[in-house]
Each structure stands twice: as C-alpha cells, then as structure tokens.
Image (cartoon, rainbow, N blue to C red; front, side, top):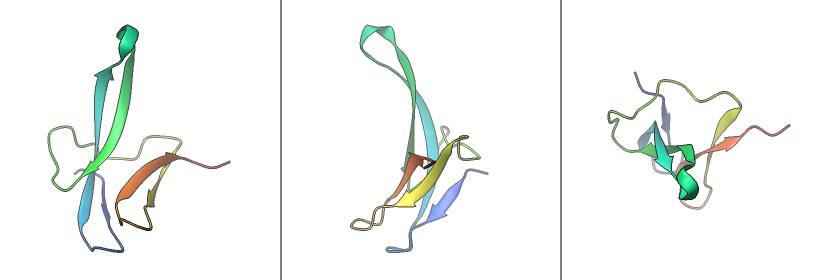
Length: 68
C-alpha cells in the first residue's frame, strides 16, 4: 500500500512516489513527489530523515528534511 496523505485544503488524497534521475555529469539522484494516483513508482513509507508538509497557498503536499 502506497503512502498517502489527504490535503486539508482540497480534501484530495495524494500518493508518495520516488524516481531515480540522471543529472549532468552522470550523477544519479532520487527524487520524491506526490501524485493523485498511485502508480508503479509509489513507495510505502516516508524516507528516513524526511517529513511531510502542506503548502498553505495551494494545499499540495510536499516532502522536506526534518528540522533539527
């Protein structure tokens, strides 16, 4: 089951996904994003050291590093 979060502003449910991308210089990086539909890239839990938050203006969920 994919990790999901419900927007407080819109009431929509969003699912967390991850994807490995290739940057300039052949460097690889994993990106995390929320989507309205759970696809094959959906992940089951928030990565260690991260937390979710909601954009106050748009109501979209975001992932950020935990504050110390």
